Image (cartoon, rainbow, N blue to C red):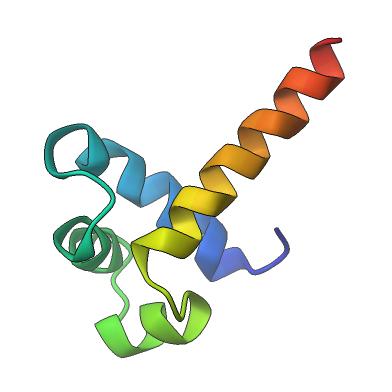
Length: 68
């Protein structure tokens, strides 16, 4: 993942998904936490939280493969 905003959003959303899941509310809270508009966040992640969920799992795969 090379988009710095997307990386910031991913880190921000992880604190919300444990309570609210990978949905639009968590995505909006992550955008707010990053001090960006929802429009800017959606420009970085057109599918919203779904894009961040995919990034989360891809990052986990990288860590898993590095440990192997």
